[in-house]
Amino acid sequence: MDEQTGDRQAGAVPTLDDVRRAAERIGGRVRRTPMLEAAPARGHAAVAAQLVLKLESLQVTGSFKARGACNTVLALSPAALARGVVTASGGNHGLAVAYAGWIAGVPATVFLPVTAPEAKRRKLRAWSAEVVVEGEAWDDSNAAALRRAARTGMAYIHPFADPMVIAGQGTVATEILDAAPEVDTLLVAVGGGGLISGIAMAARAIKPGIRIVGVEPEGAATLRRSLDAGRPALLDRIETAAGSLAPRSTDPLNFGIVQRHVEQVVLVSDPAMREAAAWLWFEHGVASELGGAAAVAALLTGLYRPKPGERVCAVICGAGTDGITG
Image (cartoon, rainbow, N blue to C red; front, top):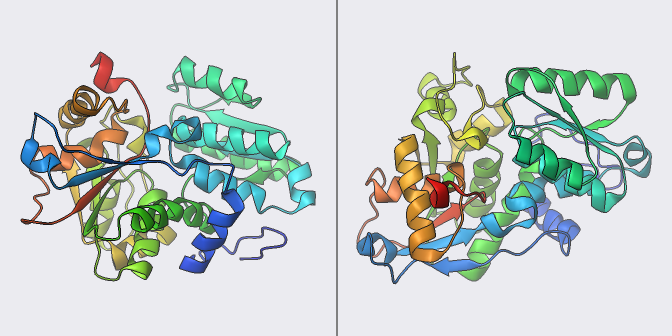
């Protein structure tokens, strides 16, 4: 990856060095989010005793997405920046790109599907983004964003299939292992695969024996279906309320990293994610969206069972009120 111009090679797999450079680039622009020991906790005390939470729900804009978006936007050349940035999102990635555009002082345009909540639209405008609602699903909005980029020369920022985005998300892993090098297993929610591919690549480079477990909604088993097929698969439909974890497909770049570094992917139900979000709020005062609670849901349901003494870190990847209002 060209550090002077920010040009990205399609399909180029980022390295730990790219993650280290991303950490330097985004330092002071994103938060080094806290780690929280889950114990003591009344409910599921045995789980809490060996669990630490990485609170990306406290990240600027409310999710880990700010890392990858800032790394990508801030690496662009001045000429590319001057034309502005554009993306498509169901919410969290769009907010991150809007924020990155705001700190870079360049215009940002975010295409949203009609299902995107009004609250997300208001937050995008608060970060000075142009909001365009087009399409029934993210795939439709993304096609419109790509057309805008082709017509105007704006830099298109993909939510997960970009080496610079993946490197930015990988900084979550370096922070975890800096703070808690004894962690044996990382539980990571999966949407398009940007977070888990960045975390898995970086964590395994630092600690080769670490275990990486992905967690997907039952109604959006994109990666699990792809792993079973041996190639990226396209889902016919999405049946989950966890909109941040609901793409119909992943990308060969993310899929290849996951194939190499992720031990398994487990599927959790929407009710299990809602219960996990409620547990996070009741026991720890952590406000999480459904997708943000997916990693904890895998533990509370027993879909992932740690061995005695196994130290587990669950990434709480997005803020929300599902545990409060649900």
